[in-house]
Amino acid sequence: MQEGKRQKQVASLIQHDLNDVFQRLGLTMIDGGMVSISTVKMSPDLLEAKIYLSFFQVKEVKSAMKHIEDKSWEIKKELAARVKHQLRRIPVLHYFVDDTLDQVFKMEELSKKLKDNGS
Image: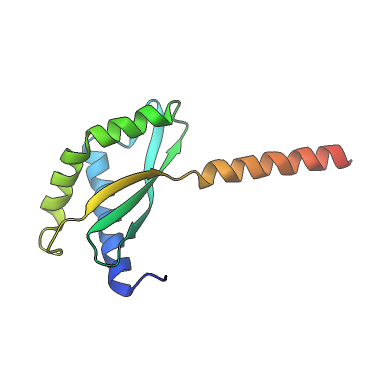
């Protein structure tokens, strides 16, 4: 089902403010790599947010995700302070790994191998 206008607005608001929260809490640099919020998807009732995180050159993605999960209460508290005047209820935040960048690199590698084998 397609996202509604309000879902997109709230997702954009949360993504913008979460980026600031992540920077403030030092979560943009983990394990020598970068962490960024690639997408936020809201449920139709605006009570749940799926946050997709992109990891660039992070050695242990699972441990980085655990670190973020451990700080989830602090993240939600900071987010609530920022968006309390725009939202009635602060959504439950669920974190997921966005591996589309990894998929792009794998596809490029396969493409190179096919070109090399074809010539």
